[in-house]
Structure formats: structure tokens, C-alpha cells
Amino acid sequence: MRSGRNLPGLDALLADPALAAVLSGRRDGLLLLDYDGTLAPFTPRRDEARPYPGVVEILARLPEAGSGRFAVVTGRPAATAAAFLAPARPSTVWGCHGAQRLGPGQPVTQPATAPATQAALVRAMALALPVAGREALESKPAGLALHWRGLPAAARQALAERIGPAWAELAQITGLALHPFDGGLELRLPGFHKGLAVEALTRENPQTVLVYVGDDLTDEDAFQALGPNDAGVLAGRPDRPSAARYALTPPEELLRFLSAWADAAASRQPQPGRSHAQ
Ligand SMILES: [Mg+2]
Image (cartoon, rainbow, N blue to C red; front, side, top):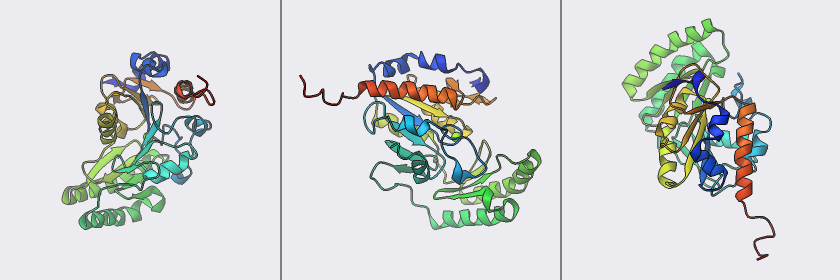
């Protein structure tokens, strides 16, 4: 695996043979997008993490079904990410790292959480709350996240040292999974990760080229689940090994890429008024 710093950039991505086939309309394509750090800049107030200017307008041009559509794969609850992107309509939103699936007009599906698991998450919250404070903790339908992005290094280290071992012990006892991400720690239901979304969409769309854009450690599961003709794209250039094949830097390069995708999708749409003209 290459470091994110050394991955080929936007020009190489646009010249990728499979992507070029999608952009020219010769193959169907499905765009998978992470939310935080990819479509939206990080902000200490997670409930105010709006997309970069221009993102929603471009995504709103994409079709809701068929080639060129997009899906979101996020650690956030699915409904939260969908609300940030309205009026753009993802074909699917995978929330809580693949544990939730939200389709248009459908209720969210997610695994049942056993009472013992719920109790473990309550216990994890009780352990962390006095140390980290409410703002740093994000309770989710299928997990609990501790966020320390934006804090001084000493404060991050203090949180990691005071909460990490306690959560690790709790995970071991209860069967929850403890995952680090860029900017914190998360306890989750075991067995869920973003690669599950890629695997499901690959099964459902075997002839379709998947392009996945994400920035986080948790996106590596998705990159690894992609097929040889799909494209994994690292958002930003973190200095860590990545299974992505390309990298681009938000927001400028992201907007250029999304525009190219949307232009191609628009050129495939039937022209209004022309379908009956022949
Ligand atoms: Mg992210």
C-alpha cells in the first residue's frame, strides 16, 4: 500500500480506464461518498458540519436511479447525513459504518441491538462522560463515538489514555468492537464496517463501476472491498498507508471531480421533449 501522500491525483483518476468508460457512457457507474472530511469540512460542532459550498448543488444534478447515481457511506446515523445533503437525493445512505441502510421512501434498516449491548453502550457513556464531557461524545443507534479532533495534542492524549483502556476492557467483556478513527475512538456493534456497503452494492450491481471517495481510516475497509475495475479515492493526502488508488484534495479537486461525474450523468439523461420526436 502507498502512503496517501504519494497516490496519483485527480488527472490520473479522470484518466482511469474504468472511470473514463463511465464518464463516456460506455459503462454504468455508481459513486459512493463518505461525508465528514470528504463532502464536509470538519468542525468542532458536529451538528453544524455542512457540506462544502457547491457540493449539494452538484449532487442534486445526479439521477436518483440508474447509472451516475450516488450513495453515501458514513459513520453518522443515516438520516443525519441525508438531511445535510438535501435537496440532493442519494440512492442509498449507509449509516453507522454499514449497520444502517436508508433508501428513498424507505424506513431505515438496522440490526437489532441486544439488551446486553445497549447496557454496554450505556456503561461506556457513563465511563467517558465525566472525563470527556457531553460535546465530545456521540451516541448512535449502533455505537458510541468519542471525538477529540480539534483539541490540543495534550488534551487528545489525555482522553485517549483515560478512556481508551476502559473502553478496550469493556469491549473485551461485552463483545463490542473498539475502532480508532481519524479524530477519536468508537465502540460499535461487532461485524459492521464500511466495506459491507461496498460488498452489498457490488452484489446488487455486478456490471457497475464503483467509485468510492473517503478520507478516514474507516474508509480503508471500503477501499479494500472494491473490485479491480473499481476506483478507491482518498480525500485529502494523509501520510498513512492506504488501499485507495488515487487521492484528491477537497474542496477544489473534489468539486472538479463531482462536476465531471455530474456532467457525464447529465449527458446520459434523456433530453426533455425529444423522446417522442422520432
Ligand atoms: Mg470521513
